Image (cartoon, rainbow, N blue to C red; front, side):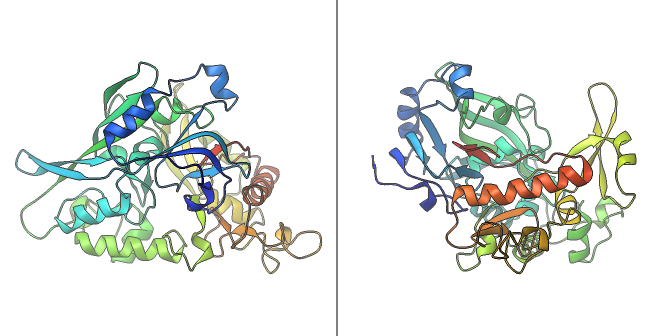
Length: 385
């Protein structure tokens, strides 16, 4: 156990204050030992942010206050994966929660296993991906997850949750919905994926996303059999696309010092489209519980069209973000990425509050212009948007 750890040293946004206690679990057993001493608080305490435990994986979807965390940080640092054939054309891959996600994707692509390739380059640990139902380029992990083993703090035991139990939705799951103010009921220990393995040259799953299809020279409207490409080629193109948006970690590039996408794409009733410009990008998002047709909007487009374009918050960025004295919204210490409007970035010496100030400004501009409230994707600990 160490007491000299700063969250800024363990998060991709490189902000966050000190923790009172820090425990690194290098095995599942070590993690369970700690979890047994931190039962789930009651709902009122969790809502008030009074959980004594903060579970940390890769730190890529986390924003902790500048005051830090007055409790125990449990860092899941155990990794490992195993594979088992299932039938003639499937393989189940079980991955430890602390295993770096992109290394998992690379491992599957190298072995010709199809299903995760479009999720290349996403930072963080594997234990986090089912919580957010991590996705990109028309793919998400709900399409391949078979089950999750987790510690249920409510019953103080290990449980197995299958795909249906996890109740996946857009950037959502049972795991996320039972987390209150960063206090999780379930702590993921391992994740099992079912991937396909076919004879012949390994091909990707059918490419669903137009941008990726264009990069691969494919027609995203064609039959599924015509929307496949070599697995390594798909991974390469995804990494290129993400890099061009500052979404692949690079210590030399401040556009990558972020939590990734700060806002989720809003889902609204299709009937509300009449309130928005005709050119507003929209994608079918199924139906609500009462049968209303739903559409998903592009948060990045809304932010840009609200006057908060790339570099918003910098002195030479969009006018709305230059601040009263023209030095930038928070003196230029934080800004929207110069490559992509969804990322709120640390330009080198930002605080958590600096990042939140930029995020609030973008959210408020979108709400004022379009009447739509954007919601944060990262977990906020000790701070609010």
